[in-house]
Image (cartoon, rainbow, N blue to C red; front, side, top):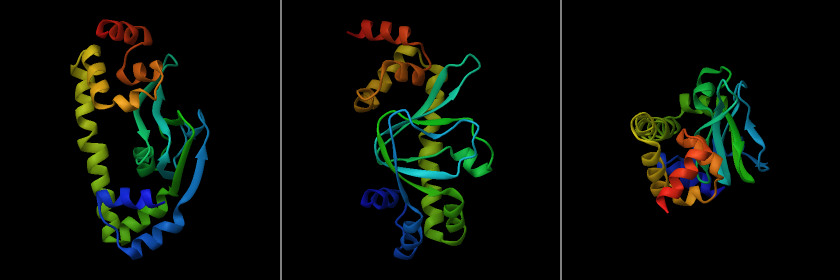
Length: 190
């Protein structure tokens, strides 16, 4: 639980009174490998902080392929945020790639605190800016303008420890290539 508070403090330091209101909302949950945290088409009710484990955030294309948009690992918050904000069914599935322990909390209860507590609102704003604007935009540009080989090399440089935890098809899906293409790129690099 201490990891939750120290991670939240990275975005904005909460007052003790705000922590006292958020604390009771947190519910510890364990997900087995391949268990779904959120199904595509469902309206998300919860946001979660990952204590340990790894999740994939993906959608299924018209041909049935899973397209991984993002990985969430320990010490990160996970949700289908756009669907949470709009209250509409989400386009993404969130699946545990490893056994995962997380603390989930109801998004509507958190948003009520955002509306009434300045420090909680600033935490929320800073989280959104960091994770859904400044970190997301460069990735979208990379996917449009870099070759598959460049995307792979960048991924390995930036996320080597994460790559060691993933299967080849997960990395290929994230990079927007087939596992066969990824095998060829890896062979060329070694």
